[in-house]
Length: 102
Image (cartoon, rainbow, N blue to C red; front, side, top):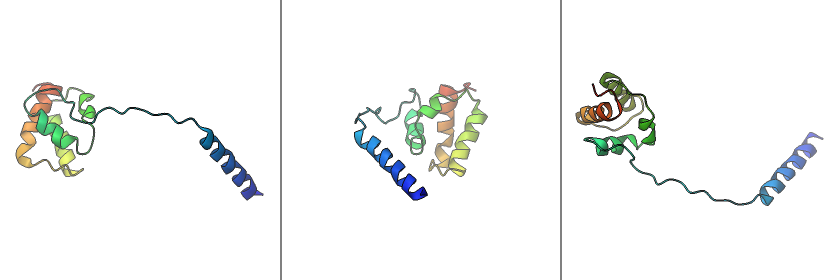
């Protein structure tokens, strides 16, 4: 009896899907939408590998040590391929453009 009920529910579900109206959506253009500044290109190049740069826009105004901690975590815990030689440039950009500037 259970399988008959499940088949009936599946048939109703499929009938609803088959009669559903097809719609379309327009997705935003992908890309680097960071504020201009020294280091924006480098920051977007590496951050956008894993997530939208919109995540940077919505962060609170962190201090430099906090931005450094976030960048360090992205490199060590999540595998961001940002070379150690470029970390200061990215952290400086984030601090001056999205942080406290200190």
